[in-house]
Image 1 (cartoon, rainbow, N blue to C red):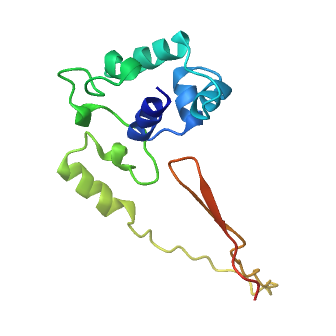
Image 2: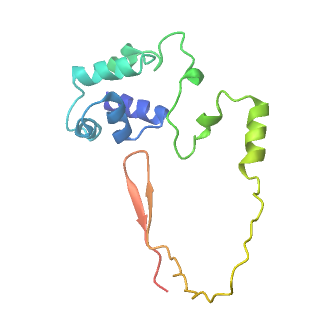
Length: 151
């Protein structure tokens, strides 16, 4: 059942923390399930099926059948936005509204200037930003850390 719960989280674009918060259960409960320490309790299963009423209970419990109940169109289910799926704000907007939003999103504002007395402004040098570490997280709960060589 752990793998089926991971599949739900993947489809819903939910981190373990977001998933626990959505189900209103302790985050440690989800962590223990995903790490294989504990099996999901009846309470967890009930909350998943109650919050996500389109999930097929037979699939969740036994892995039989489709993930979705019969007659459910997966494309109509609202998903949590993530880094790669953030277009939910545009859902429900007509093409004309989206075009107008795009045109006005980056409209330049007129530059306003004021007459001022000449003043000397001390300039300061902004520190050069350097990458110190890059961490890549994978969906199998592993990660890699990359540290650039020092110049």
